[in-house]
Amino acid sequence: MESPVQDTIESRVQSVLAKIRSAAEKAGRPASSVRLVAATKTVPVEKIAEGVQAGLAILGENRVQEALSKIPAFNPGPVQWHFIGQLQRRKVRSVIGVFDLIHSVDSLELAQEIDRRAGDAGRRQDVLLEVNIGNEPTKAGFCPDDVRQAVSELAQLSHIRIKGLMAIPPPTINPDSARPYFRKLAELAKTIDAQHLPSVKMDELSIGMSNDYEVAIEEGATLVRVGSAIFGARHV
Image (cartoon, rainbow, N blue to C red; front, side):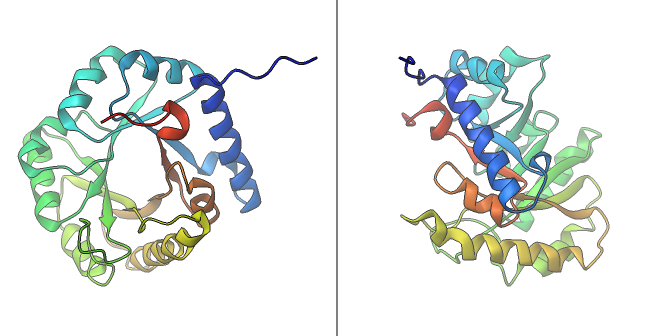
């Protein structure tokens, strides 16, 4: 009689990676075209280390101070750090040069502050633009109708590189209900790419979380942000 598979962080990481590969294959895409960002908000360093040992290569943090307390435990190390939460302008200086990618640039003013601080540091910061894809009044992000004009202005900034778009669709019970929002973001990215603006690429689509990442991959996600499916329910 086979012994039951233990539910560990390692087994969950391997399960998520397997589902990513399967969803990519279903969409006719190479598995390498999708990268897993493990959302580590409130997760202690010891558990994150287990995940890294199991194969996590990108860690995503929502809170600047929490991230800054964790990152030294993994440096130097094999992982990238992405900032995936709402970023306040007064904290921009703390994230420049610390995160490989900022997913959540939600306004011209924030982008301009990142550009200014990156210039002060002699760096260029890679960013994604956050789009309020469902036009929800309670969510941050560029309105879909406004983002193309915003990108034209952002392309003039010399110390950021726009790598793509990020969105969180309205909450749904059925993951498939998020599909139209993911599809809309992918179409928006193609429209922006066709403008051929300097320092603007639409190589990345950061969409999909623990409940809907497989659907997101089918619709073009290159980065999926998964937390609870790896680390369990979050305790805020």
